[in-house]
Image (cartoon, rainbow, N blue to C red):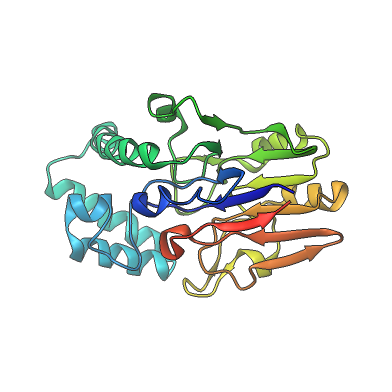
Length: 259
C-alpha cells in the first residue's frame, strides 16, 4: 500500500502546506496555489493588498451573485484609482505579487507530484520548483505498480482565471492519457453533485471530457478539487470513486488515502 496525501486549492496557506506531506509515502498537489481573493477573510489576498478590504468585499459579493459584469466594472474602477489603465501594466503589477506568493509557497511545498490549477501561472513555476518537485500535466507516472494520470488547469469560465483552457484543448489532454489506475485533476467531471458549490450557490465548470474518460476507462479513483464547498464530496461513476479532496485553504490538512 502507498499512503498518499493530496491537497488542492491551497490559496496562500503556506504554513499548513509545509506540514501537508507528513506521514505520506507520496505527496500530491492539485494546484491553485495563489490567493487573489479570500472569500472568508476579505482583508487577505492580492486584491485586498492592492485595493483595500472594502473593494475586495464588494468584488466578492458581485462574483458570488454571478454579477460578473459588475465585478469587472469594479475592477476597472479600482485599477483606475491607482493609476493603472493599460491591461498589460495591470498584469505586470499582479505578476510581481504572484511571484512573492510563489516564493513562499514553493519553499513550503513538500517533495512530491504537482499539477496546475486554474488559479495558477504555469509559466512562472520553473523559477520556483525544487529538484524534488515533479510537475505532470497530460502525463502519467508509475507509483507502487499503479499508473497515475494527471491533468492540470481549468476550463474557460466567467471568472477569467489565469490558466483556463478551451474545452476542446482540455479534451485533447484527457484523451492523451490512455488508461490509468488513478486519475488526478484540478477540476471535477461534469456531474452536478460534484460541480455545485452550496455556499457560492452556483455550478462551477466541470469537464465533459473527464466524465466521458471516467465512464470509458473506469480508474479506481478520480481525485480533484476546485469546488470549495461541493454538494457531494464523493460520487461513484461505475467502479470509479470520484473524490473532492477538499479546500486546503480552509481545512489546512491533506486528504489521506492508502492506495
